[in-house]
Length: 409
Image 1 (tube, rainbow, N blue to C red):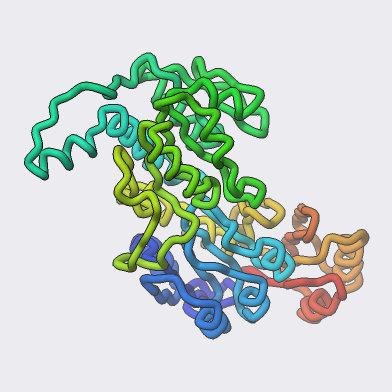
Image 2: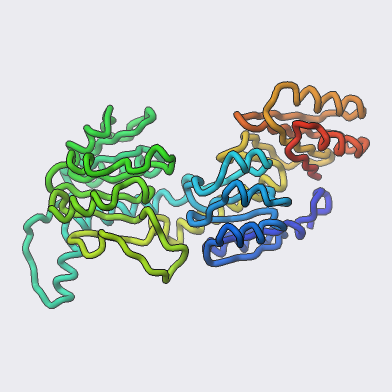
């Protein structure tokens, strides 16, 4: 344990939920933190009880961190979302409590892309149906409705990290790629940017969804959108369950407007493995249903564990908030022979002046100072000479704008 740090590492308690890869536990334990793991998500009441003495909580997509849970915490310093999405966390409440959120926006990209590519191949060749036939003792060698991917048009809705990488690999298979995104995105390779989602839906042989979890995307694809798609097209969703109208998709496949679909995410999902599951999509022809396994590879889970754990450790040890989803971003290395004063405050005018006036009144020499703000909070890191009246820490905490003060080294 580095005793130069203001808070002993062995007093930092970490709670990891939902079967986060054991590498995260290893990394955080090696850093000196006390780590507890739980294999499933917890209810709100359970979380309120657990979080009271927790410094860091790590979750995946099932755990809901509401404002009530966050505001009930007294020692929580940071939240790790060991996944891409963070809609399950009240980001504003976390920011106003001085709690940055770190996620893994890139670590599982390749695994999701490979799942989508595999499903496209399986659906195009009707492999699931042919396999089920043979398991039932039926030899069905017909090529009717079976196609190569080469030369087909792939429509991607959402051209972020996953959509753009899928675009590149699909082109390497000989596909023609078109995409739609609400933001201007640079086309990779020969991919064509479309001005409307309607254009993609009408022209693509295969449509795949890769949008984020914002509320505006709820029921993005419904009966009207499926009616726009080509007769015999394929549809895939590995983004968010609420993005599609499941009943409308069921109807489109049942009525053979669509030749098949693959769905990895659902509007309502069980909290853990082994639980029961029901969907109107079950039993449909040429339909692949997977239990939210887009990132379900050893490589992806280890990459996520490594990435998020490192971000949490950097924040605890240096105050760095690089790539936090809800906090102003400051990236700093560890320094020696100074004390680092970390001040989190409501973003209102004049706070930095107040901080510096307090430092000046206490005759404290500033070695370096860094300020970043967002709509909700301001984040000031000040490196000062170690010789100073410790009374200044109390004075900083008593400022009416203060959310949290920490001292490092």
